[in-house]
Length: 288
Image (cartoon, rainbow, N blue to C red; front, top):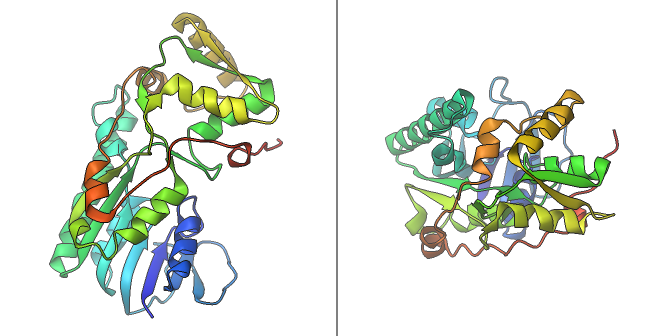
């Protein structure tokens, strides 16, 4: 039986990733900071990159669905024998490279350094690596964009956007990302490469938000405002502890196309993401 070591297994991508590996007959050892219950074919170890429990000396594959920076540092010094390593990064490596926000530029730089570190380490030990870069992730109510929008909309029954928030987006479902990670494991065309992973539909930012607001229970409404008015509303919301993270750089990106080519991943390992069809269950109401 093939054996996979999984990092980030309790995260929004990690949970469907483990489900897919188990369906495909893999034996899994997964790492978590908090205690988890073992199941047939799934063994949990408690720890993290700075406080590691004893890990297997050899596995068939290592898959990371957690932060790429921390994983790449660990992998560069790890002594585990694995012929295959797959790690999730982010399209932020390109999107935020020239951001007006220095913190975002730092994120892009650290992502690029992490990709390079992983590639160098894998080549040095004769392992085949793949980096997977998702676009805007949704589907597990744990993402940093659409779920944050719905938390506000659940409270006030509407969500404001600046006019002309028409930058194109390609939201991608967590299950499609999990499938990509497993499908690329045995695909030679995916070896020693990085792939952007957009969703299966390209649509305007405002339309993406509108679809999400429509499926909430009860539905919420999109309110499009002139930019100066939107900024006043945003500052008022942030003063109340809402809409944190929607800075100037994020507002600028709402009007910018962030579109990535699905063809390389499709040709390399059959990547076929779904269209954007959100449901209320993806964005449950959270009290407090």
